[in-house]
Length: 153
Image (cartoon, rainbow, N blue to C red; front, side, top):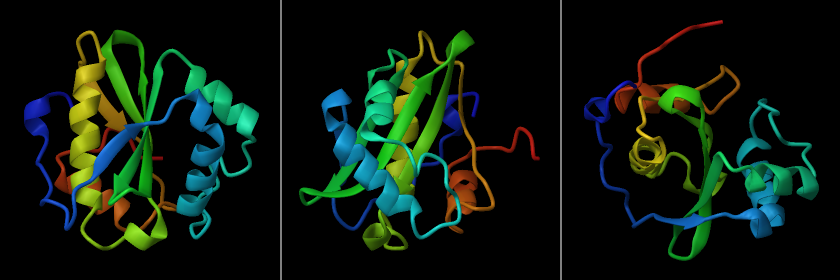
C-alpha cells in the first residue's frame, strides 16, 4: 500500500477492539499469545522463540507491538516495524482462535494499517507478508483492505 487513501476500512467489529502497547515487560504474554494464534496453523514463524528472544524483539527501537483486546481479554497481537526509506511493515498480525471468523479481523487490520501510516517519518509504504500457511481468511482480508501483491514466491 503506497497511500493511506488506498485503505478500505473493514466493517465495525461486533465489540470494540482496544490496542494496548506490548512493551518489553510483556515478553511472556506476547510469546503465549503468539503461540495461541499460530499453534493451530502450519506456519511456524516465531513459535519456538524464548521469552528472552521476545524481550529482544520488543526492545528493538524500530519495532512497535500491541495486544488487541476485546472486553479486557486478549484477542490478538500485532507488530509493526519501521524500515528504511519510510517503509513500515506489518510483521505480525493475528487473532487468537476464539476471535477468528467472528468479524474482528477486518477491523483489527484497519486499525493496524492506520497505525502503520503514523510510524514513518513520513511513511511512504505499508507492507505485509503472507503465506499459504497462514489462516485462510488472511489473504482475502489483506486484499479487501486495499493491499496489492508486490511479489509472489
